[in-house]
Length: 344
Ligand SMILES: [Zn+2]
Image (cartoon, rainbow, N blue to C red):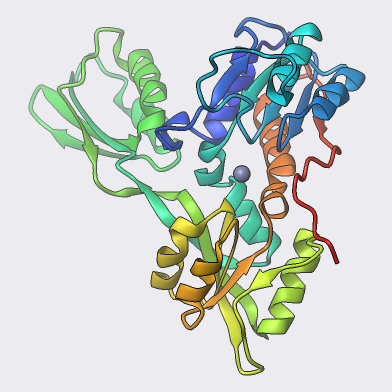
């Protein structure tokens, strides 16, 4: 039976921990790594209702976007909503994992899925994750090495480049790879060259890793008026209403930036990327005021722009975890955890 550690390995292959915001609180928040997983419920938030939903489904692990514990806890008071959730999870033997800003910034993560939902193409990260690439060097004896096998295996790793310098008796091997693939690379090197391998040199590169980063920007297949675009967003994200900067019948939308959840820090990046519109959430009146002449700023709701996490994460788990016959059911939460409603 799969353990929580197996599930976490799979989740981190999809959304590496190193791309999370440094003050985030991701990973296993309640439970034990060795606990068996009998079913997984993927949700946006963890509320009492979500814990009840997991219990009813027989799931023993909740994978949520928002960390159920974020600020350090001084007490677990079961007469508070958060304490009650923690107590209920422990009582029912349900572990809780958070995949938060790492899932936002993953290639194929929340923002990539949001861009795809809105029909954007030629999508790239709005704020690429930099400093996530490692350069690793080592030399290896010509005679001892399964060089061809190693090169073949490394070339199969995503976002990884290999260079070989040919000397008389040895080869100098330089590999550039995302930091989260370093362990995989070490395993390949050990298999090809023996366990004694030591990196001669190892340093972080400045550049970004393709596809990883916060937010996303891309283009619509054809230009829309601002009104058509807002209808498109509301329909596709299931919004009861939207807030936007004022627009006229002349306002045209083709290049669109998105950032699920609170994205006000990326308005400048959206403008710099030439976006005609920026779809995000949790924007203040003054944000609208400051940027009203620059682009169509759209507050589509925190829940509405992030609930796509549920299907995206569930799909990553199905793709990455259960290729063998040993399967645990993966459920997508149907509990509405939206804490904000629109009065119309
Ligand atoms: Zn959020």
